[in-house]
Structures are given as structure tokens and as C-alpha cells.
Image (cartoon, rainbow, N blue to C red; front, side):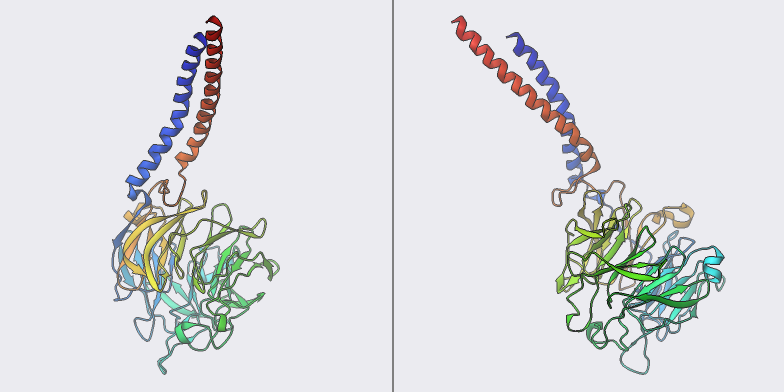
Length: 466
């Protein structure tokens, strides 16, 4: 009997050791389910000055304020406004005669040095899009480009024309390069808006251009491997630019594309890379902290809830977690903690009011709550984390603006990616608990085996005594 008593003590120790991990994991999951606010929350902020907020894009200016541009409101000149996160207020900017309003791109130029951006340091470049046509019932696609100077007019800001692009473009991409130039790619050059704004009459552009803020001029950026529009672009750590997906226009307009290519700014040339796992257009591209690129959602005949990650080291794609809602024409933005926040867009012909979060570590998505309105078109901007006198209570939050006068903030929560039974997402605390659980289970197996052996020996001894 003496061996059994000793093994009983060992069993209690093993139970205690294994129980640490089990208790931690259970409490983490319970907290996540009981505290939905752990995923952040939507909150209203100041309303735009005009009856419709600008819906053409958003950029954060050097002083932490947000420029929203442009909308059809304010005919004949599209309107734009500036949001001050310090007090949640809006104010209109000067008019922009000839600015594109839909399908245009908006890029903040570098703050310096002057040899990189000349007199245009700190300004914002707007290129292409639809231009209002006051002489006809339809609007036209424009090659116009404009610069917004936030310091002009005693800080009220002003738009001025810069050299136009070589060709008209809408639903193209614009990416800021490491050398301060802006790469513009693809787009639909159609002279007018067709049915549903699709690119029926003319095929998408396979040309690319570079805007040099130091000179205010455009220059060719090589010939892409294929024409595309409604595609996605992201700058890699190497300084190169990845393009993927998009629409080929014409009869296959809604089919999407799976091809991908890379622009090398040193050689001013393009090359193909691994194809996407699924055809997609109107999707998003997000640069993760590990240097990989996440592309999510989109359209491929139907609405997509899939996402995939591109690895620049191998030139290949890998499927990752499924979105909680299929969506296209949405927004995705990388938060300060490295997670990705996706919001808005269209879903099965309707518009979504939900947001969701992607954890690059676990590869999982989970819901981030719902706002008080739906967004088919939404622009987002990540407010800087400080200083507090520049962003007030909005520091670190996401500004969201859709169709209408209302604007919202999404407030991420610290450690917001919780264990979720619906998505199978894993928390950091549960990941840390796993080694303890494994060790505990190993101890269980060892002690159980020893106990059984001891009991067998005890039974043999008892039978011999009898």
C-alpha cells in the first residue's frame, strides 16, 4: 500500500500543475463571451457641414487632421471637407473646379525633404475619376490632377491644378513610393460612364505613370503585363509594388481576375508573380507588420468572403481565415496594434453596417460590432495615437464616413482579439496556456500509468498472501 499512497501525492501535484493552464484558458474564453465591448465600439462624431459628406477618399494630413474628398455636392465643383479629431468638428475647404469625384485616387505626399517633393511637400495629390459634365446627362472620365495645400488661405486650404495624367483613368490605384513619387496604375479610360459605371466601351488601361512632386510632372512607368481596373495595390518592404486582381472589363466585367504583377521602381519595369487563389475585383489590400500582404473580399461573379495572404519571399499566396460577411467595395485599414479592421461595402445587393477584425497571428476574423448606419461607400482614416492636443478623445480611433452627413469613430479596445467560439480565434493568453495544458496532460498520463501498475502489483501481492 505504501507505493499507492506515494503515487496519490504525485497525482495531486500533477492535477495542480495541469490545472493552471486549464483555468487560464477557461477564464479567458468566458471573459470574451461576456464582454463584447472587448472588440471595440462604434460611436458618432461631428456631422459634415454639407448634407452629404465627401465620399471620394480620406487622408491624414501632417497636423493630424483628415481631408475628405470629394463629392458631387457643390455643383459644378466637387466639395471636400476637413475633420479635426481634437474637437470632432468639420469645415469646408476651397472649391476644386474640375476635380474628379468618383473613382479618383487621393495620396498624401511626403513632408520632405525639398529635394524629394519640392514646393509640394505636405500636399495631397488627387488624380482622375469622374468629372461633372454640365453639358450632358452623363459625366466623363478625366485625366485631371490636383494638389491640395492645407496651409493655403491662412490654413483654410486650397486646390490647384497640376499637370494632368497622360490618359483618363477611374478606379485605378495610386501608391506612394519610397522615393516620394506616386505610382498610378491601370483604370478604366472610358470617355463616359456606362451602365452601372462598368468598363464596357473601352478595355482597362495597361499603362502606368509616375508623378514626381519635386517637378509636378508625370512620366511613364512601363507597360503592365495586363490591363486591369478595380484592382488592389500595396507597397512591399523591398520598395516594389504588388498589383493583384481587378476587372478585365467587357463581357467578363464581373468575373474578376486572378493575375498578379510587381513593379520594380529601380528598373522601371513589371514582372508577373504568383496568381491569386481566387479571381477577385473591388477587394482590399493591407500591408501586415510581417511584410506580407492581405487581400480580402471582393467580387467574382458573386460576393466573396475569402481572403488570402501574399508572401513576397516566395511569390505565392495562401488562403487565410474566412470573413464573417462576404463583402466588396469595402475598406480595410491596419490598426496601430497590427490587426486589420474591415468595414462597409456591399453584400448580396445590400449594404453592410458591420465591421470585423483580422488577427495576422491566428489568421482569424471576428466581428467588431455594428454601427448605427449602413455603408455601401465608406472612407476611413486612422487617427494618430497622439499627441492628445491634436486628436483629443479620437486618438488612435478610425474615422468612418459614408453617404450622408453623419460620421462615426471606431474605437479599438486594448487586446481586443478575444477567444471566440464562433470563429475559433485564439487569444494570446490561451496560446501561452497551451504549454501548461500539454505538460499537465503529460503528467496525468504518466501518473495514471504508474497508479495502474501499482494496483496490479498490489493485487498480485494480495493473492499470494491468500
